[in-house]
Amino acid sequence: MPELPEVETVARDLQRWVTGATILDAAVHWARTIRHPQPPERFAAEIADVTIRRVTRRAKTVLLHLADGRVMTVALRMTGALIVAAPGTPDDPYARVVFRLADGRELRYRDVRKFGRIGLWPGGGLRSVGAGRGARSKRVAEGGGRYRIGEVFSGHGPEPLQRGFTAQRLAERLGRRSAKLKTLLLDQSFIAGVGNIYADEALWRARLHPLRAADGLDDGDVRRLHRTVRQVLREGIANRGASFSDYVDGAGEPGANAERLSVYRRTDQPCYRCGTRIERIVVGQRSTHFCPRCQPGPVGSDPR
Ligand SMILES: [Zn+2]
Image (cartoon, rainbow, N blue to C red; front, side, top):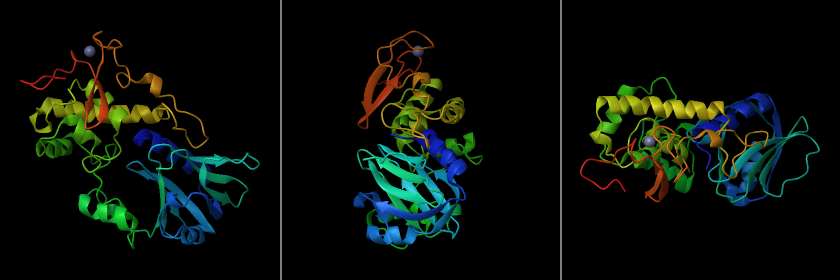
């Protein structure tokens, strides 16, 4: 599943390639891909004849900012991809929505498993992002309605690569929570964009066991975690994302970060720091990989 570095890579590709492009029309081949507005015919009518002004990312979602102020959101979820296709590129049977551009290219939303969602929202309110908590976002997810783009993301936590995300801010947030570190890093209302790969990588680098309680960390632990979360995300972006199955960039090419990971999916292989075999446990139904020697378990508990 694409996480922050993968989605950021797609957004940067599109920023370079489709900024200034005009969408002539959209063909919706899978109605459920369209989250808002409903029905999909209305989405297609509203997206026709608009120009893309810039492309950014919030959490794990690509944001296409349109010249008229509205914002199109593309949540890739499990297998979604946004690919710019040159004129004459053969049709893709997994393209769920195809945006025809005025210059002859197509922006294709490809999604084998069809979990991804596309929305079109009025602009405004993005400054308040990260300030709210889950309730409002849940209503949006269920009902759609007349929400502005900022409210779509009101349930999301801070962006870990933003300047305002300091070790101090992380310490304040962790200190109020007794949840396990792995669970908390995956919680999008706690911190936006981190998923299974980068949570395991950050914890290994910080030498923190995934089952440690958030409020049990000392100042040094928090500073290390703050540094390693940002490191693994930045390196993921530099390597254009990690491709294990479906993730591809805006050109349809896989990223190079999967083979550079230290612990994720390295079960039974030697730890790069100490040679101990990497172990795999399940935390909150998610595979979790760690070194039992470098990442000692919570005091007084079985680390497995
Ligand atoms: Zn180790």
